[in-house]
Image (cartoon, rainbow, N blue to C red; front, top):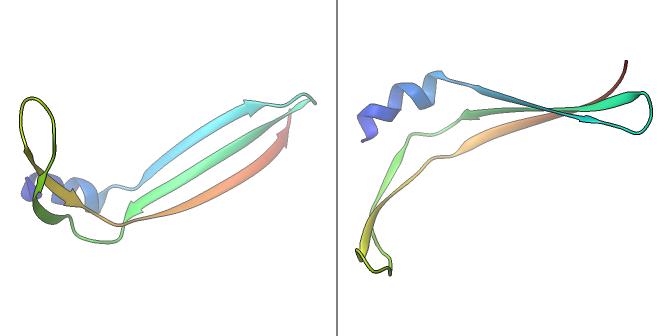
Length: 74
């Protein structure tokens, strides 16, 4: 699984934009920039409790995020 996600997670930076109309004649623009700063780590099997299985694989990765908030007029 690590090999499948390695290139995707390390070579992609994600940008998400959210826009909210404000009561005045302006809007709030929130922009999130997220990118990976670590390798995908295999934590191994974890015990879980559900009806179909009692184990699952666990992976973790550290991400860095920047958030930009702007109020813009029309």
